[in-house]
Length: 191
Image 1 (cartoon, rainbow, N blue to C red):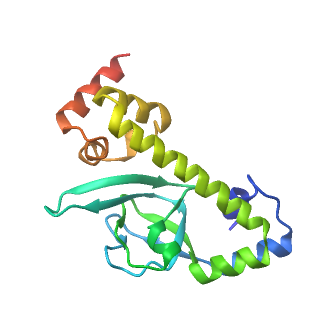
Image 2 (cartoon, rainbow, N blue to C red):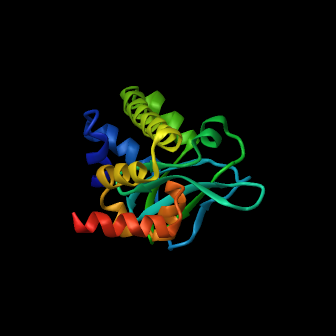
């Protein structure tokens, strides 16, 4: 659990007693590649801190076409946040792209921790703000960037993801054909 403490202490300082309480509220779970952690219409009662592995959050449209919202890797948090915070049914899917280990925090324990350790609210607020900013950047790139600019932004912001995510999945995320993505990939290797 030191990984969790180190992660939290990038934003707030914890006493040993505070971390003991935090530690008691999380449980570890391992998933295999392709496992669905959350399915549409599931009750969403946990938020997940990713210890190792890689996940994608996505929705499907009426034609069963997948639209990837985000990727999440080590040291990141993920869930269907709308369902988690409103205690409603999931509208999204959360799937492992690699074998993944997470630390799970239930909604009731999340509330209990925020009450017992008020500075944790600041930590979770900073995480929420970071997520909100990332989502805005994603929306702006989808609406205003060219295909090449979307690829370059991903390459600049998350270079390690390009090695970990299958090209077809990456193309879906960027809204590109696999062929276009492959061309960009080859061009960037020449530079």
